[in-house]
Image (cartoon, rainbow, N blue to C red; front, side, top):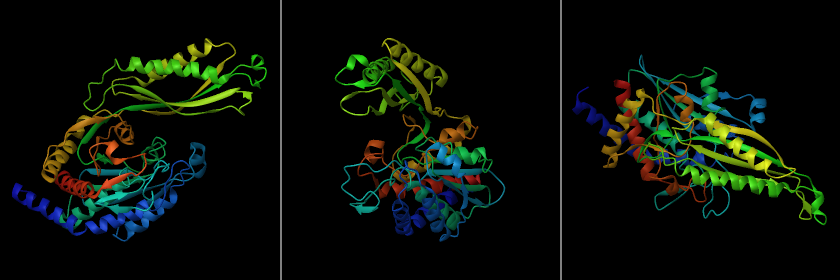
Length: 414
């Protein structure tokens, strides 16, 4: 295809997306209005609704329910992952993955978290930015591609999954593990102003500190598990100071860090607590070895516990998400997205790393080159993801849809 013909097709793709943008916005609103709070993780109803909406476009979504017992053992209630396969001919398969599960809304909202209200060009609601927005951008990019470019080579698959918040093993990990898909390239939900090629790993652990319960009037007859836990926590937080001396060479990623996000224990205010549990999150830069990281954390916890008489600990790994590192084969994705993002946005879009961890690693671990790109602002902070009043600028949705459609056109004709 000549460069003139390719440019003409790009403009035609843009025009189709502009003409159908109101439909895309309504599609996203319908998705946001079906809650997918995880926990508790009852996500099958959203998959059913998504499949209904896709059917209106002539798209048949394969429904792949994860066995109920497996889901409940995992700590969730229901998962049905979706695959939409659009085969145009011989050639590479490109998967587009977005997740529908989200953290609960929490407090502080000034808009209905499931209202999908539009104010001043922004849609408000849980998952508007991360990542139901890319259910819409990916779907409408494919619709534009088929209506305008009419590809005759390759395959596009839409992977709409429901386990990103718990680590992805029963989302993309399950689809890949069951042999239900094996794409050649993949793009996962992201933001419009950067192409992410690497991300941090994440280790999550639950630490249970045991002491001996006693009446608060005679505390010397017990062993205070909370004081033991505080001593352990201080030892762990001291590691954060050391982590700042370790720098990643990946642009967009700084240094490792540790966070304790949940603590519970005790029975009453007049009782010396006999058990306290906390959950920690250790972000690992791509250069770190997860085995060494976990071993070191266990060592720090055990040493601190040993310094308090009568204190014992149990340590359970909850999640190990390895870092995403770039595969050589991702270059066609990076080049196509960067080229078209610059054309659509009028500015260069960098290829960087992110301190988040995502489902993409599950594809990359299996040798499938992938990048993160989709509808959203310049930073997670701007999106209010996982905070009150999450929102999406509809201009970013429009731009990302155009960039993905144009990039698919190039990648399928290469």
